[in-house]
Image (cartoon, rainbow, N blue to C red):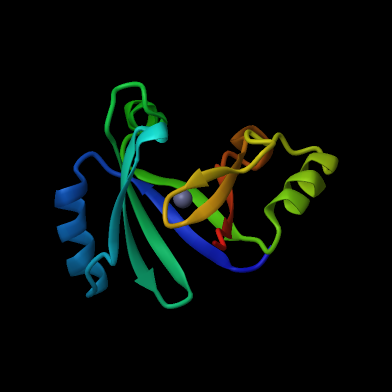
Length: 134
Ligand code: ZN
């Protein structure tokens, strides 16, 4: 794995949180994107080599809605950049981690993504991501 690509933060109101994080970080989000398949609307802030991703649910059964219902707003996942996501998925399965996406799926910000189940990672939802080259 390479660097921390981004931290994902679950929020109730993306517009309000965009304002808050713009004040906090001193920089506006460089993009907003909806991922309909995941039921989320996201925004991204650039922080040097890493990013902050804010996630708001767009439907009641979205994973983000369920997370906020259970735990409230806050840090939702940590994402690591990897050079070859399929190799990492295979390696981590071999190591005994539970990979939630055996085949990477298309995520926000032009990435292939896969998640690891938090039960094997000290309660932290881990995202792997690789840039989509087209
Ligand atoms: Zn993410």
